[in-house]
Amino acid sequence: MRKRLGSLKSLILIGAIVIVWAVITLTTDLIRPVFIPSPVDVWNSFTLLLSDLPRHLLSSIGLTLGGFAIGVIVGIFLGLMMAYSRNFMDVTGPVLEFTRPIPVFALIPLFLLWFGIGRLPQILLIALGVAAIIGVSTYEAIKNVPLVYIRAAQNLGSSKMIIFKNVLIPYMFPHLVGAIRVGAALSWGLDVAAEFIGAQVGLGYLMIIRQFYLDTAGIFVVVIIYSILAIGLDQIIRKVEEKVNVWTERSKASFDKLA
Image: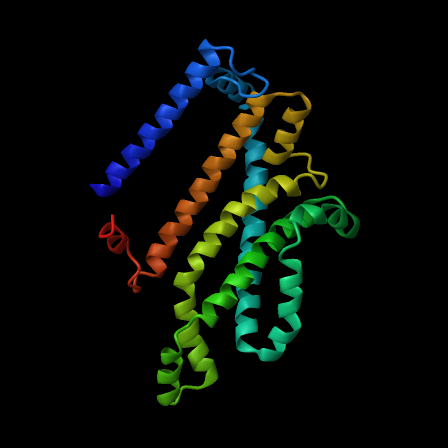
């Protein structure tokens, strides 16, 4: 019941925003359509782009999910290795800390030079941005494991590998969900940047073309589609997290008591 009520509130808020948007853009001259088009203009642009949308949509989904998956796997691996091996941490840690603050967009010219034009540099660009976040978050999650858990396992005669496998990794995953969700949202933004690398198809490419023609309504259409895709992926991650981390004390009930 509470979940349905929350969904209803969200729908009411969205409906109110659309109504205010329509009233301002359709009944007044306060804002020129080139800056903020009306809902009618956005819908008309959507119908004009509808025939080409499937191929652009499939291309961007494949590109984003591929880069996101690689970034998560590589990031978790790096974080685990840094936590497990001091030597690996001494070598990799400074490199990761140096590269993490670098804007991924600034690497586009280098990726063009190193990898040329095609899907490979686009996927690598997304994967790099996601891996930097996941790697640091994985390492920090393991560092924050309560020492009492490790001491208890050591007193029971557990080896380093067993402690790492049965104590550190299970403790890490519930604390890593937030970083994965942030990485998922970031991956859609990185898709737009990646499609600057010679893409001829994709939502980011479609947005670039609409920009050349000052088609603000078309840009709105692409932004809305990106938002829907990002929300959908985030919901999938949340559902998976609820299944995987069902054993933890983390639950909505604890937050409901504070509401």
